[in-house]
Length: 133
Image (cartoon, rainbow, N blue to C red; front, side, top):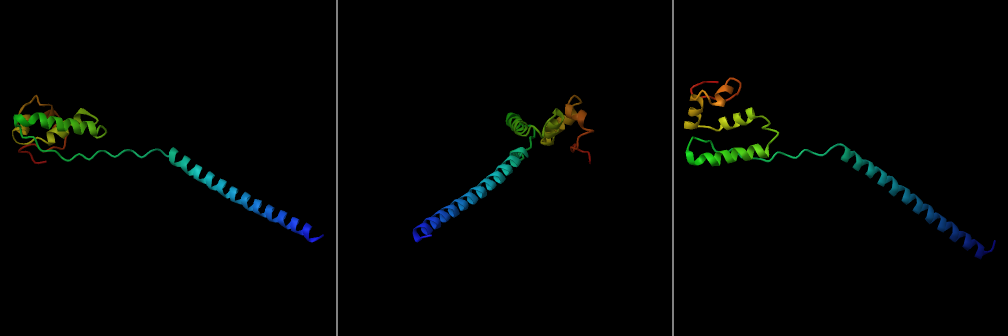
């Protein structure tokens, strides 16, 4: 074989070597893509994280002052709207409201036999005036 033929064979072998290197690189990229795709599928199928409940600061106690009633009830309503999973029943909402009553408001509630909170008093862990729990 003369040197021209040897150069042609050498160039052909070098070209094939580069093609084999590219082929291996493509296989590595494809394998990485498959692994990444499987990871994304696993993450999506595992479900989404539940959103956190919004933090609502503890509101002021309501003492029975007429001017503060609407504001107190609005604050309670916002708590119920923003945390529906916490306050799923009327009973839970009543316990929340009654626990925020103080002074004249709570005494009036306990003195009225028609007060719905008084009917729940035996089953709710709330402190009544003059009663030690």
